[in-house]
Amino acid sequence: MTLLVCLAISLFGLFSTSALEPPACVDIPHGFVALHLLDANIIMGMRYAHFHNFAGRPIEGYLQPVCILTAQAAKALLAAQKEFMSMKPPFTLKMYDCYRPQMAVDYFMGWAQDLNDTVMKEEFYPTLNKSHLFSLGYIAKRSNHSCGSTFDGTIVPYPPPKQEQYHFGQPLTPCFDPLPKRFEDNSLDMGTGFDCFDPRAHTNSTDITAQQMKNRKLYQSVLEKNGFVNYPGEWWHFTLHDQPYPNTYFNFLVSCNATGRLNSKDIF
Image (cartoon, rainbow, N blue to C red; front, side, top):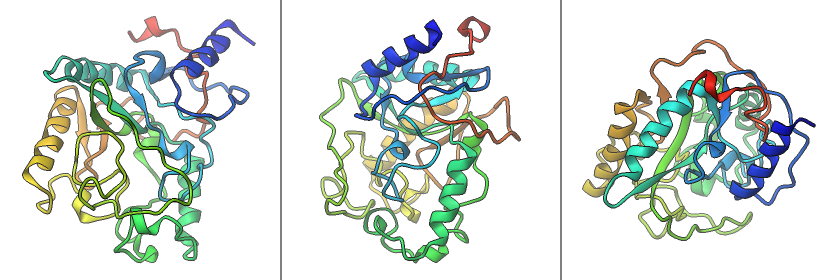
């Protein structure tokens, strides 16, 4: 095992919030980085490596809860993080998802077609029939996440408040319920939780409070200033405007040696 891989595993143990045992590491394409190795203050709330997501289980392709991005996207995101941390009061980014393997997108497709699997409906799509998720655009065959320069995230006051821990099987509440009824993930109140399949999650929804909209605008403005474009259907979803691989859908695993073949001097 190379020194870089060993270093990545060691750093992962310091910064990860996961209790998962580190698996055997895998190679990824040159030009991608693991965000936790670049800024330890960015919170890794990677939902698809755990049980608290719309499927209710870890998703295929996510071996560890790490945020992998193209180096170009990571560089822009670090600039945004610096701006958030310089505010008074300061904030830090929290990542829900970053690079997403095509195998995970395929897994979502299979999940959406199983209409009997509704274990997480009460939180993530309480007002929708699961059969409508395709037609409404919540599930698709391709995702910008697989191109490596898209992420889902939010901002959290710094130092971070206590994080509620999700336990599989606990009672669920709708993702659009007011705080503190819905799941509290210690972020600013954006009006809905992450992956809320509801019109109130649209970035410019008028069915949220003035303070919730103010929080969304703060988050959006800093990211757009640093080169990201929001997807209007999801307040948490941003893509680097000049992404390097706009038509390439990668399928490597999300794992710990994300800097194993990248010399950071190439980009940074």
